[in-house]
Image (cartoon, helix red, strand yellow):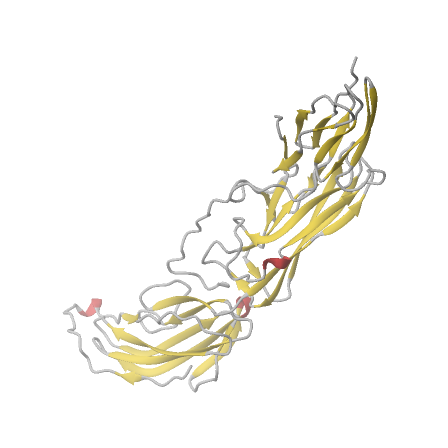
Length: 411
């Protein structure tokens, strides 16, 4: 920004006051909103008006920019520095007297960097013209803006192997591929990673930054034993190229087989962020291999019938079909085996002339088995909107459902 100013002729009536009450009262006009593209330069001016009863002898004007913005050039009379959280600051001394009722103008200039996305600009002075503090009032403002750009959130899964009853460690990862960095305190698009625990396992150790997820948002502090978690950075910040890793310790059930959970790049409230235009890499798998388990989602068990033989029934993708039966044979019954509950499919009809019975499928929703036919970076804010969570319907677990087949004898 440049330190050039324009002095206005007093236009306001100066109120009468006692000598002890005389004081300047500077107010600063608001900057217009913008959505610059990376590389664009924002060039606007603000007006400073003294509505007080005494002159302001000199004005200290401050501008602060979040890390996706920068000053296009340095101006005389301004001191430049970087403060907490990579915030760029210009502190400019406007060497002039602003009398009661008078105005002056000063420019505010900044450019959008390649990583610009969610940004904010602080600008102004104090009521007396001294350096501003950290709060906001009529003399010191904040402008939130979103650059015309995107950020690509990526989910990365993991794979582990363990015997039934043992514990394994898996790490779910959220990465920002850019080009924009993320600092979101203005909307519900706060970056997060949704973690669905693989069916047949129980989360025994959970990161502190991960909370149980309910229907449309976090339901409380971190705790083990839940089927679904949402993990996010406390400061809602994710810079370009940064990866956040969340490690879970899972206990494998004693009857578990190979199983898969799911991780999804999303927001804290389970809503796909508007700034992420590439959903293709939003989802990955958390796989737990259990030696001797028969492969993901597959279980084989024999069965017998009267009046004929029955081949073993096989479950693939959570659907169980009865084996071939002889005349008069009865089909087998599929039962979903889930760590958080069981579901029972319908019983097949009696086989006729070698036909086979087809039975209820088993699926898992939010850890509960069901069967068909069965049961700005340290800058503050003036008027930050409250976060409003949008309702999101419960979604099915991404892992394949493990299904066992029990034997029925016909007498």
